[in-house]
Image (cartoon, rainbow, N blue to C red; front, side, top):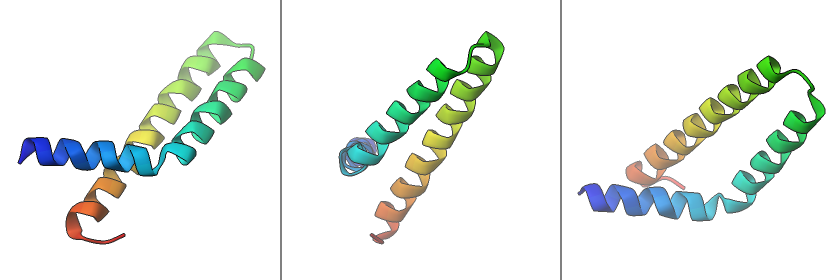
Length: 67
């Protein structure tokens, strides 16, 4: 069961690869633009949180059988 969930997670990452890459590039660009280290850390934390929430919601959709 656990390996199945992991496969779903990998599959989701693979399906979202364009979105994920875009988000990482966008976040990286934002980080380069902002000069302040504290702001940079906050942005990175928020971005990570956002990405995790998106992945979780996608995994739930896949597990329920939705697209």
